Length: 319
Image (cartoon, rainbow, N blue to C red):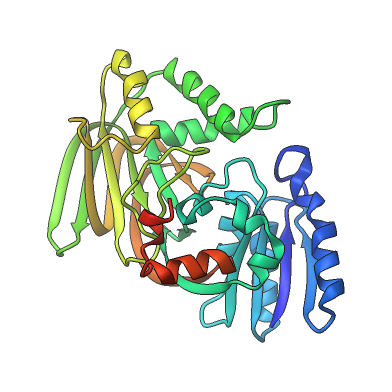
């Protein structure tokens, strides 16, 4: 198997992704029997192109997305069907939310631990052709994600701080969209909702936005998506709601509804901001569906071992 590191040179504060280049070279100097290469991204979408090229080259390959959740999402979207590919991540971006579901970024940053890790099948969310490993959302939080890009490159601002600043920005503008929602539930039933909503989530992972636990019950390989619907509330209640929401402790709030299922369609009269693992765009209609076992995702050796000990329930137990 060849090891290909797709490195985003501007990812992370102080260009952390570039700093790991030396560790990569040192590891493979100790293991000359392993084939590897490092490829730098040079523009938005480059990770997708590189991943596709490596798939087309054939043979078993492990692709390491060296950057944030956006680099991971781009890399995943370049993987071609029926290719012998494993997907790994070295989380050196501003948020690194996907790996939080697996216990956090520390183990993924240990190169020996990661390279000697094990690939497991994980699901993905199909968002009208865009693939998300983690969480796709519509509404206020997506608007926050869009504005977060403006703040996260400011000096001294980390991912969580950028998200909080973007929340304040969005809070100062009109919030809440009229949405018509249709969900295919876990048992195949059709569930419909209509009203003004702050946001809706289609979640395969638990965290987004630099540590907000928007879907605390989501498990990346259980074959089901977790849909979270948040009704519009008064501005006075939003600070209290956000505190509970960030901690994933909102089950007792009347404005929140959690539904497990396989697909969701959201329609609105006006274009809504959508966020797919950090990629933001606008649409008046969006469809989300589960792709079971879409990727073979590499867990660090220590995480894979812990998962076996606790019977695969890493998402709820390792944390």
